[in-house]
Image 1: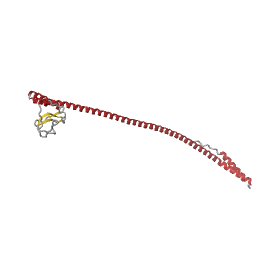
Image 2: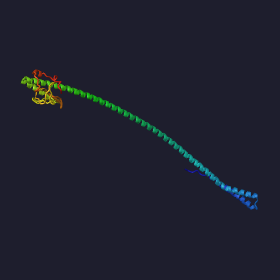
Image 3: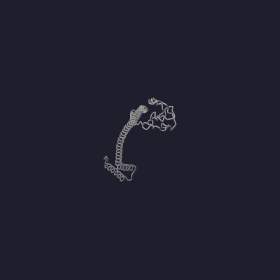
Image 4: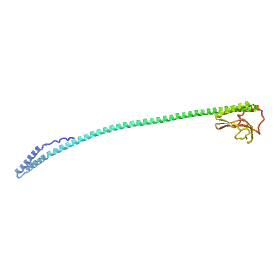
Length: 278
């Protein structure tokens, strides 16, 4: 920054005045001899005024420089105050921006919290829907499985009854003594049993004359026998389905074989033997 020029005071008039006063004082000092009071007062006054004139320009310049320095300091202070105003304005703007950013951040955080709550609620609702769907599917599958099991049990009972009736017909043919009929019914029974084996239904037929075993055979209702008794007749074969026992063979042993005609034995059906333990 360029400094303002300091005004210069001409010292020539002061020097001339000082010289004149000193000349007057010298003239008075050399002329008046001896010096009286009046001359001494004039002499001192002239010297004092001359001395004042000698230092007056320096005092005036000092005061001017002092005022100039003060004015420069005041200008610098004004400039600094202007800078402070600008800084205060910048601080105010920064504070405003910070408040705006803080508000924007608060809104963003609030929106994020709301979105997170909505996501959690949607995930919970979705989980509940999936749970309901799974429960519905499980119940549906359970009903289907139960229905299939019932259907399986029903058609197993139907097939077992059919095979029992076929076995009864075969036994009746065997008692009739007609070879052609026996052969035809034997082939028919074997074919039916082979078809049943393909479905997993396997007949259990104990050989004639085998020993009775209460764990592997059963008797008609109301009959009893000891283990080891000879089996003399097969009332109905036993069956297993896919390795699981459905019914033990129903047999007649020698000790308790009742007297009965051939026609009543031939017409013994599965419904008449349904009361036998499985």
